[in-house]
Image (tube, helix red, strand yellow):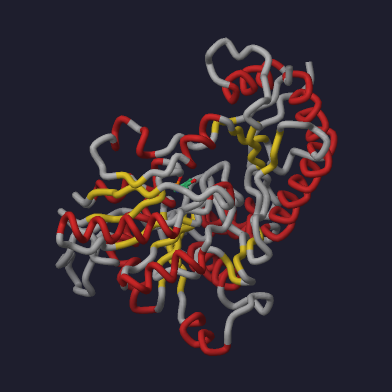
Length: 399
Ligand SMILES: *Cc1c(COP(=O)(O)O)cnc(C)c1O
């Protein structure tokens, strides 16, 4: 049997251990220290102080004020971002329905309600027109404006950012970007995660880069970053004793995990290039497979990191072993029998039992994609032989 091809394994540069060893040698085995500071600086160099970023002259000053705070997870980053935006009990937050549950869960931690908005078919991300209608309807129904908008960049694909921000500006509602899957994705020459008031990154084990577990919040300026850091470290006030004037959390990234992050940042560029290369291989090898469509950049502004490769099936396509389980599940089982890991697309939040009572504005797009799509492996250990194996297996299971 061939080796198992996994969806997205992490890939270490070899430098990680140096940073960790240093933390041990200097006794910085705590959730602060030189690796945390160093990792934040590396992230800021990548996302903000980077000559390759295209930014209009008029926006430069504001853009360069941004700061990044390293946290224990992407979920923690969403939680603190919402707190920084003043979300509290009884509030509503507009959340993309087609996503991983971590985009919506922190809204409920705050006693607020996620209001789900469906996707549009070209990016698979939040539909700006539907968002606009949904906001108008929420205001009419509740008499209150939603407190924030959370668009998500699924599998690294940038949303219709320009249109979403036009809607956000029209209603004067801040945007918290969930860029957890979009490390290294760009839209119109600017990194995803740097458009909104706040931007969320994740460094969980299978994301574009890893700290084993971790995340970060891109903040608008130093003042906001200081507030977020304070919340993340139990909101200790500067007194000789332990003084607290706000609720606090234990959400700071550990200095050990940040050491892994610093090692990862030495190869982040190669890593992203590899995912784009894998997508190109799939593009070539799937080009003549009838009935399989690759989810690809839909516009010239869009430059996905292609964290995972996602495909959809044409209506007439039939898959072996579809005994009523549905085509994605039939293909997933077949690939699994060929020792290849694949994954269903995210099941939309408005279909999840936990969120059944939340308001939802749907147009059928995410349900349709969920019923006929699949994610294929695209990690660092996937090269041309592996992509060939995956594509061959896909061909075998098409009837
Ligand atoms: C992974 C992920 C998160 C959460 O990140 P963690 O670091 O795992 O907490 C949030 N949103 C999306 C879309 C994700 O894929």
